[in-house]
Length: 174
Image (tube, rainbow, N blue to C red; front, side, top):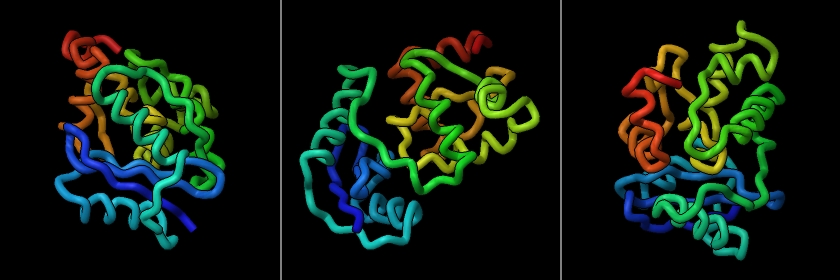
């Protein structure tokens, strides 16, 4: 059974979900609670119970602090088990990208097997169920363009602006 909480942030409605092992889902800002629930249904077919826990409340507080510019790291237990072995490897590499830094898909590919995996890395980054905590928004194209983002490019721009890195892209540096 998965548990989740939904909450309103200054960026929109969001949600955090957990399995018995740790936080396993984040719903990026949406216009309504229903859209947040739809994000969780896309992430996993498991039944979802709207029931707070200390772990969910801690994750919520940390996400809200991050969005308010008061937090740069997260220290909640994560459950990455829904991904394939390759996806988990990519997500662990993303966890090594520090706040305020950008890395390319190629940079990640070199850390998980080689340059030839850049496209597969892009797919794994797009499947990340824990955006913000597993910072996929910090991954950009090698040519200093934004690339994609599961939460949409406007949200990626807002996250990069929050971290002070969007200006680096606009100057053409990664």
